[in-house]
Length: 246
Image (cartoon, rainbow, N blue to C red; front, side, top):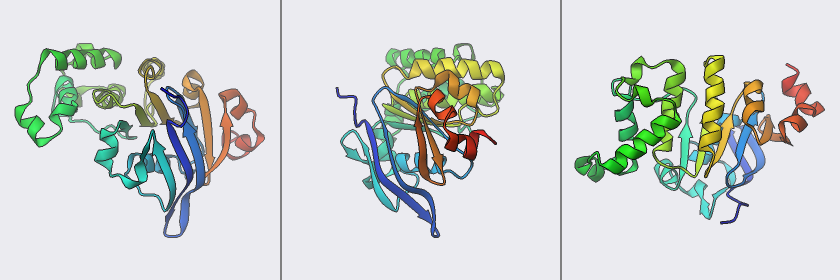
């Protein structure tokens, strides 16, 4: 399978009341790549993820995922095509156990027919146990999600995405509010789940970015400012001026 043009964004623009949150952006991600997007507040980072997953429709431009034009699809279609999204604030079912949360996001259960005839088969349990091990929650399968720590809730939401086997996973500030140890564990987690899929994440924690990034994209005022390795980006005077120097 070709590695190029896995995700290809061309001349992407979105305007809100005349303000261009993303402005003529060209951006691409290879298959199997772990990409981190950084930049100051208001740079257009979350808006970019919103457009990839269909939450926001662009004013202009194209978003190609493999051979699909995502701008012509709606959110659930994009999700079913293999694009998963974790938002900044964990969105989990706090009154359900970790196991039930993972089970309810299993693809077969997400349709009306699937819900009516859903059975917890050995295959489904194997998938849930595999994901639980990846997200460090094997011992918490019977725990109600509302009782988890903040970091564990972040991991659980990543797990909800993983049960759907996305080929492209979008993550918005996955380590926000985590302890130092949880951040280290999350770096391990993301490196392990990036095997066989592409990850695009937004992050402000530069120490964490250094732990995981293969390529770093820097946005500023909705435009691409710089791109390269973490070392290249850190030494770019433009990036230092508008972001890292603050």
